[in-house]
Length: 126
Image 1 (cartoon, rainbow, N blue to C red):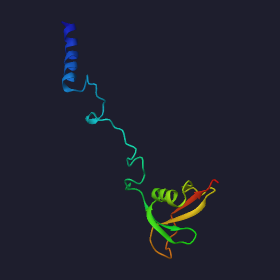
Image 2 (cartoon, one colour; image 1 turned 90 degrees about the vertical axis):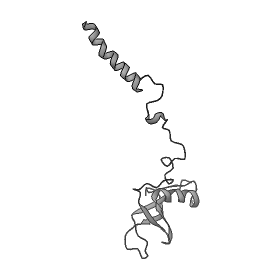
Image 3 (cartoon, rainbow, N blue to C red; image 1 turned 45 degrees about the vertical axis):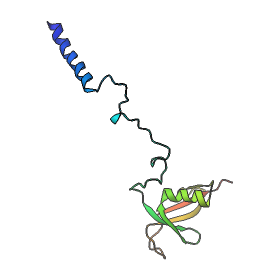
């Protein structure tokens, strides 16, 4: 009698799992049984497809003559400089051995009432 009373809860547990659909399935363990892969043109892979709400946008001025260029985030401005103005040149915010290209200001006014918050540099490797 003792042997039957121990295996009875085990049988009930296996039966409950089998009938609820949480056991004995061939589908992966994701929600709604979908595969969670991101395509190549997803906003997590390309930085400017979907704006991140925590990204700060700046008013960009050229460093040499202080003329206005545009308004955008650091990632977009790095991409724009590397795509249109300096193709093949590394553009980033690292000042080490770089040439100052642009300054990012928080406000649109001239003369500037604040100091620039972001600087973009080009690293020429010719």
